[in-house]
Structure formats: C-alpha cells, structure tokens
Image 1 (cartoon, rainbow, N blue to C red):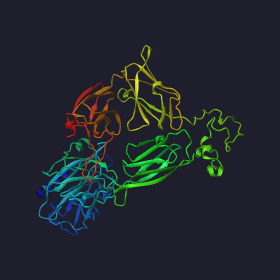
Image 2: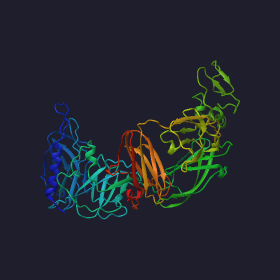
Image 3: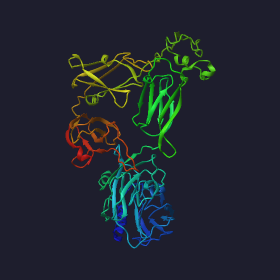
Image 4: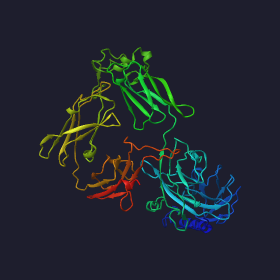
Length: 637
C-alpha cells in the first residue's frame, strides 16, 4: 500500500511537535529543542539513489550527535550502517551500502540529536524515503517489557521477518527494524500489507543480530499483518516528550513482547570450590544439570546434603559428619556434558576441593602462611575456641598487661568476642504480613537438630493475660535453609506477640548452635490503613503466584501461591501506588521459566492485573477497602 502524502504528513507532524515546545518565559536557560528548517532531498523522498545517497537535515541552530550507532536505526537494515555527520547546522546521513531497488526505507534517529548549547534533545525523529516511485505507509506498534518484572525495556532492537527460518535472528538481517523508546514503545513505519513475525533482543554489541545466551530476547508467537495507515496527528508516530508519562502510556500498542534470557545450551562445569570445612559448591554453565553419580572419596553418600539453587545452575553441598574432614576432598562426578558440537554426552571428572585457610585466625599479618608457621590446618581452625586446644597462640602478645583466661584474651572496656561455634539464625517477622506469610527462619547451613516444638510462642492481651499460640513449621521446598513458622490460631489486633527460640535449640552440620533469640510484634492498629481483596477464579487446578508489588515492581509486599479458586486478602496497606503481578507456575517449581527463541517456545507468563478502567496501577487512598474479581482465564488468554 503506497501513500506519498502520508510521509509528508508524518514529517509535518514531527516539525509541528518540535515547534510547540516552549521554554520558561523570561528564563535564562534554553529548553526548546532544535527546529528543522530544511530537508534535502525534498519530501516525499522518492527514487532515492540505491548507491552513495545522502540526506541533509538542517536545523535552526547548531546540533550534536551522541551514540549514533546505538540510536540511529535504518529499516530495513544494511550490513554497512549509515553514517551521520555534522556539517554546520545540518546532520548529513550517508549510505555506503547498496540499497534495495523499489524499497521503502525509514531512518529513525532516536535520541541521537540534541542542540549544542543546552543539550535539548530532538527525540524520536523518523524520515521515510523510497528507492522506487511510491512509499509504503503502513505502521505497526507495540511494547517490549521484561517477562518477569513486566517493566518496559528501553533501547531494545525490534525486528520483523517476512519468512523467518529457525535461526534467522542469529544469521539474517531483518526485513524491518526499530528500537524501543524510554517506555518500551516501538512503531515500525513504511510497511507492506503482508504478515510479519516479530522478534526483539537487546543487541548489546550493535551487530543487528541476536547473540544467544548473552542478551534478553523475546518474540510474538503469531504473525501480524499491518493494516493501519500513517496519518497526521497519530500518537503512534508523533515525537513525544518522554517525561510526559500520561501521553507516552496512552499510545496505542498492537502487541506486547516479553523479553527473557535463554538458557545456555552448552553444559559443563564452570567452577567449583570449598567455602568452609563442610560446605562446597559446583557452578555449571547451564541450568538443570543431568548428574548420574556424585561421590566424595571417604564419605558415605548419606552424609552429603545437596541443594540446587533457584536458578538451577549451582549445586551447593554440605558434609554432615561430626568427624573432621580432610584438607583436600576428592569429588568424582559423572554428568551429561556438551561436546564440541553441543551434543550432551556422558562425562566424568574428578574435582579437588581444598579447605580454605582462615587467615583471620593468625595474629601476626607477617606469618599468615601455615607452611611457614609450622601449624596444621586442624590447629589453626581451633584457635580461639575455649576447650578445643589448651596450647597458646604463639603469635599472641602476652606481655601487654591484659588478662588471659584459657584461650580467651579479654580487653578492658570491650565486649566479649562472639563465640566461634555460633549458628547465626535470622528471624524476620512483619506484623503487616505475618497472617499470610508467617515468620521467616533462615540458617546458614543445613540443620541436623531442629527441636521446633520447644519454640515458645505466646500472646498477651491488653489486660496482660498471656497464653500460648499454637503453630507449625514448614520447610521451604526450594531452599533447605529456609523455614516458615505459621500460627494455627487467628491473630488478634491489639494483642502483643512474643517468639522465643531457646539457646542451642538448633545445631547445623558444623556442630554450631544458636544463641537465644526473641522477637516481639503485633498487628497494625492504624485506622488510616486500607485493604484490597481479590476474588480469584479460573485457576482450573493450575498453579499461580499472586504478588502485590510497588509501582516499580521491584518490591513484593505480599505473596500467595495458589492452585484453586479462592479469596485473597491484602490488609494493612498504606496509601500509595500498587500493582498486582500474577504468574503462571505450570510446573510448580516456584519460579518463572524461560523460553527458547530458536524453537519458538514462549516463557511462562506473568501479567499485570488490569482494573475495569484498563490500568494496571492502583492508586490506593487512606481508609479504602477494594474488592476486585479476577478471572485468570481471561487474564492469560
């Protein structure tokens, strides 16, 4: 579809937008962007030369170019990128590569142009031209965002392919290209009425091709045929002030593309190490390693505790044996490793895991090498532990007038040194979320003794009547170091709550035990607080994660894991801006799984809940209670 007039109207609209921006009246600072005063060749640019062509854009003031190779995008792209240079008050674009005959092109300048004096940006300017007799005038718009946070992504390379092959994005230049703006928004110009497949990736090295594993990428799982003709005044093609949030967010978007980072296909062991006497790790190149056998010489298999990290590419393991371990452990692992062709094949290797030397236990910084000091690692690891070794530290200064008892040196006016066998237990509780999320208990190493029944959990009424709170403890299915304590009795507003974990209630694989821990809390009583209730339907037995997040979506206030239709309460909320992020967890692994660009496999979906007004943002006021129905079938259709 061709319409030479449409291009003229687009440029006119762009110039009009640039002219209408006014700076502060009477202010000393120039805030007006540059204004175009001439374009050569004249618009519309038809029969543009396929070789050695140039475009001159002249402004009313001197301008400068910044990051042109990242910002300026030619569509369709050429192997040799167009080069822009400054000549007096003009930007001159040269085309060193041969252009296609009878082809409509668009060149988008992004944020490359600004004035010299104040750096006022001339954002979003696009020129359409054709090497033939007419210009294709259809447009296609959309938004790119992170598949997990659902935040818009700036500067993403978006590409259209007419007849895509499996590996087109890694080896073939696109049939049309553009970049997303500050709000993740993009709009293709000069398209034909044919079906396109949309891909998007970061293009960190500006090679106009997708580099697998190193860049975020995404695609649209169905083709889109452009039908909208570019017309004067359309918000899709207008030059926007990126600080005008309302205007930028109100632009029509025909499709959304969610970017993710693919799993690396090649599998091998990247690194390994020994963090402490009983804790070690293996870092794999790719996620979900296929391990056949895993043995440590001299240690029974049932004495090894393993955990794969949430990403699935690091294996941490602990030795649950009270006996001292050897300075060097020999680990034999047989797993599926990628060969030179990328094919997984059985492979075995032996890894040496050397116990780290703790230099902090040596008093003299000049004698930190145990081989020179004559001390063994076993002796050094026991330095400072009362009752473990009655020999004195040969590097300690015993003539400084300080008292010495056993192995402990007490300094006047200082607190006693923390015991070396202390198990640092972290307990977190928030009165606003404790009813739903419970009390977090996290330990640094796996526990071999867990007497949870001896935890004392009590509540006190305003009249100081104390009673016990019934509770149970759940271990996190994805993290063996994390426990959640949940009350069986309903919490009561106005009551005080006290949780006490007695000393030595827990013991980890190192033999370390905890100090006594006390946490007190109560439910909020501020009558200005608000609440939101979601009435969830359409689960159909599938698993979902429902999160209340802040405006930037980088903080989770409250989270539910659900697999059935139910009512979810989000109480005790301060006045502010919130959103709900709902994630499909189809395999129930508690995380959002990525897809595959080459195989055209979409990632698991995360979506923002949109209210009846079409917005995904909830501006919650004080003393407000909101109830919202949510149909998950419609949300994810």
